[in-house]
Length: 293
Ligand code: SAM
Image (cartoon, rainbow, N blue to C red; front, top):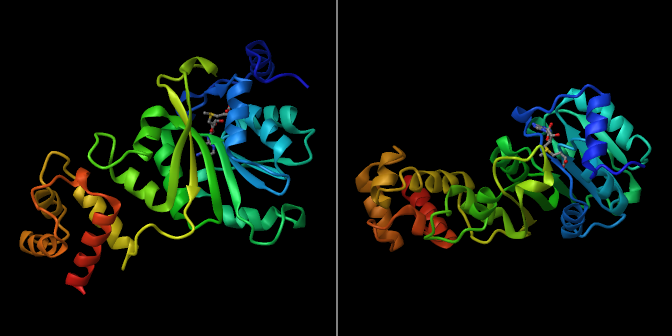
């Protein structure tokens, strides 16, 4: 089996298929076996696991996942990669490529269609392991987290800057609505930082691998998740403004209403949205929800 971490092999495969790398699809192929091992190790895979991969590319990570998991289902959007994947993965009985757009896939449905008893008890959660296409990191994360899918661990490579936002704490410049959403659904931990040099072609930014462990119980009690996320987005809407002005600017309610809600929640209206903790956002959203009922 030819090593897909060898630049010469990668070039030869690409050329023999007349494949053109598409930057617009975030195609940056990994060339470092050590990093691939670290990504897979971070997911703690067993032979009972069903693993989804988004964007198998040439199949380098898919092969390594297949060694440790029961089955890997890899969703690839680029039709031109399918013949290559057939060549690099075709011999593996537990690796399957699905042609499609990960943003439109119902992963529970896909799992239900393919899973059989060898992957443990029915209803066992599956995992996501992927080197994400960076142009859609946030939409993919939100799709995987808000889609209600039965996923328990996501180990994903992304731009370092986004990874840092996911685990940022209140008050810092990286903390935003994405940090709040991800920390509401999961416990994020950066596993490794990855330089540009280990990809072909090299991306413009450095990367990091992050593990998101899905929470079994939400960290805060909410009256309405929908209202919570509306309030969070409103609070971060205008970063340089005070909380009261950002909330009012969102058009969700009048200044008077927000003033009352903030007083009742015990939050100073002159604070900035980015200083609020998850608990404070929950309290604010719950008080607001009660005020409009
Ligand atoms: N896993 C490979 C690796 O590590 O070398 C390739 C990773 S590359 C960063 C991202 C991959 O995602 C590319 O193969 C690209 O074609 C694919 N991709 C881009 N948009 C996608 C989408 N919406 N759904 C599924 N795959 C997508």
